[in-house]
Amino acid sequence: MADTKRPLSPHLQVYKWQVQMMSSIIHRATGIALAVGSLLVVAGLLHLAAGEDSFNHFKGVIGSPIGMVLLFGWSWSLFYHLCNGIRHLVQDAGLGYEIPQFVRSSWLSVIGSVVLTVLVWAYVLSAGGAA
Amino acid sequence: MNAKETVVKDRRNPLKIARGLGSSQSGVEHWWTQRLTAAALVLLGIWFVVTVLCLLHADYATARASVAKPWNALLLIAFVLTMFWHAVLGLQVVIEDYVHTRWKEVVLLVAIKFLAVLGALASVLAVLRIALTP
Image 1 (cartoon, chains in turn orange, yellow):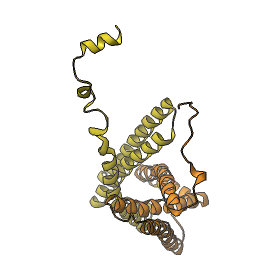
Image 2 (cartoon, one colour):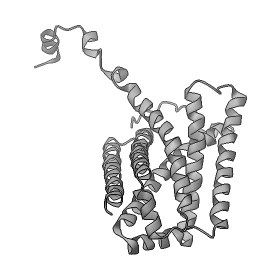
Image 3 (cartoon, chains in turn red, cyan):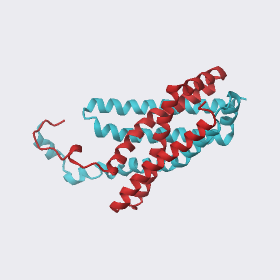
Image 4 (tube, chains in turn red, green):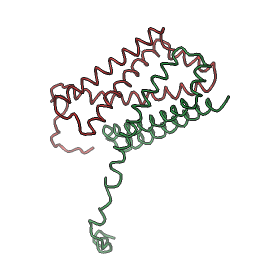
C-alpha cells in the first residue's frame, strides 16, 4: 500500500445507516459463508458415495445441535444470497434504480430471506428435525 | 542499454503498444460469467434445496437411489460445477478488494482456485460413482 499522507475518501463511519448498504455488505458476507458451505455439499456427496456407515455418520454430524445451528445459518445465507442475487440481476437489467424502489427492494431481500428460512425450518421441524 | 536507445529501437507509436491492453480484451468476461452462473444457480439452487428437503429422514438406500436417478445426477453435477465456478468468481473480487499485500493476494487467489477445482472434481466423481455403480 502507498504510505502517502493524502486525505482518505469518506469511510463507513461518516454515513448514516441505510438498508441499502446493509443489503450490499450482507450479500458479500453470505457469499463467503456459502463458499465455505459448498464444502458441506462435497462432504455429503463423498459420504454418500463411500457407503452406508459413512453416510449415517454424516447424518449424525449434521443432525447434531451444532450441525443444526450451522445448517440454519447456511440456509438463511442461501436464501438471502438468492433473493438479493435476483434483485441484483434485475438491477443489472437497468431496472429499480429510483431511490424508493432501491430501498424497497433491499427490504424485500431481507424480509424474503427470513420468510423463506422460517418456512423451510417450520417444515423441517414439523417433520421431526434434520437428518 | 538506457531508455533512450529503447525508444530509438522501437519505432511503433506508443498508442499502438497500449492498444489491446487493459480491460478491452476480457474485462466484461468475469462480470458476465458471474451473472450467467448466478442465473443458472437461481434455478439449480432452488432445485437443490427442494431435492434435499424431499430427502429429509431418507435412509441410505433411498438417498443413494435418488442421487443415482439420471436427471438428479445430471442436475447435481451441473449444480456443483456452477456453484464452485460462481464461488471462485465472487471470492476473487472480495480478495482483490480487501487483501492489499500483493503476495498474500496472489496466494489466496491461487488457493481458492485449487480448492474449488478439487471440490468440484471430488463432487463429480462421487456423483458418478453413485450413479454408475449398481
